[in-house]
Length: 262
Ligand code: KIV
Image (cartoon, rainbow, N blue to C red; front, side):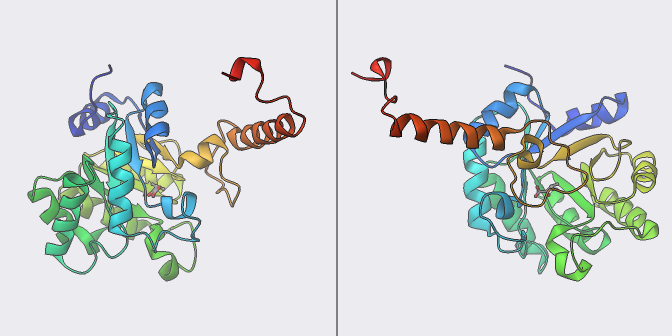
């Protein structure tokens, strides 16, 4: 079994320049496959609202749903680190509520860290959660829970704001920060200025690591695939072919054969 990845591994990789690899997962079976691949971090992302539940944004996802998916990911007992997303409205309103909900994602969801969206505006919450002994990953730039405020899933280009947010997240105690949907030169600057690792998604090649949504990476997403998401496989097409072949064999009486019968 590979060595368990922790927040310390993240810092070591930042110092040595070795890239950090991360992908989303929402269940037991895929988590086992991801762990076999040697990837460093699994994000139980609230993108499950779109990839698993079919919503058009992450906003409807609840704490109970995040706990459920985090638990079934954790049941695979992976060597990679499990970071669980804090869903919309689980941390925005009150510091104490943010700490309790972050704690529940560890206590009942068996996550090993939490991720929450926002920069300077959520620094107080990051500080309180980390002081409760819970590692926090920040998430700045394009923050999907603010889709209506941003006027859509748009690339964020306000360099001063992004740099300020990055420093606020680091100073509040986050162990790493996701940079989503920002120009590469801003991500490069942030990565150079911060002591904590940056994990990019649509933020260019100079981040300390990269993350992708599993369904985009595997070609399972039949909806809109963003420009930054490279398809490393075409599992969606392979699945359709397999279902169609199965249906054909059943209709033609070719399945089950002798070898599948008792
Ligand atoms: O929920 C998610 O999948 C995410 C990634 C896009 C970083 O937050």
